[in-house]
Amino acid sequence: MNERTTKPKARGREPLRQSLRALLSVISDAPALIRNRQLDLISANPLAHALYEPVLTGYEHPNLARFVFLDDAAQAFFPDWERLADESVHLLRRAVDHDPYDRSLHRLIGELSTRSARFRQRWSAGRMCRARPPSERIRHPFVGELRLVREELSTALDPDVTVTVYLPSAEETTHERLAILTSWSQPDRTPKDHDHHPRKEEST
Image (cartoon, rainbow, N blue to C red):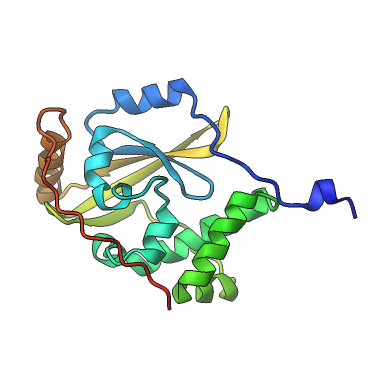
C-alpha cells in the first residue's frame, strides 16, 4: 500500500480570495459569513459578527460543529439544536467523503468524538440527514429570537467554501431585532462591554 497516497495529510487554512472578502463587505444589510467544508467560520461581515456573537467570540478559530457540541451556549442560541446537530454531522461526513486524508478534519472529528457523547452517538449511528429547510431560528442573547431565511451560495472557483446569507423572515419582530443588530454592527455603535462567561464544554 502506498503510504504517500493513504496517509492523512495536514491542510492548513487556505487563504480566502480577496473577491470573496469584498463580497462580504458589500453585503451590508444582511448577515453574511463564509465557512469551509469542516465548518470553520473563516470570514464574516460586521452584521454576521453581531448575529453570531456567541459563536465567534472567544475562539481563535471559530468552528460551528465545535460550538454546537462543546459549548453550553449552543442549545440556547440555536432553538432547533437537534436538527442543527444532525446537519453538522452530515456535513462533516460529506467533508470526509470529499477528502478522506485531511488530517485537520480527522483531528476535529476525534476531538468531538472524545469530548461529546451526543456527537459520538450521531457519528456512530451513520444516519443520513434530511435536506436542510431554508428557515432557521437564532435566539440572540441580547435581542431575542430571530426567524431567518438562509441562502447558501458557492462558486466554481471556490468549491471548498460556502457563503451563507441570512435574510429576515416576514415576521415584523425579526426585522426590528435585525435592525438593532445592524445599528450595533456600525463601527461607532458596536457594544463595548459584553460580559463573556467562560465556555463550559461537554465531556460526557
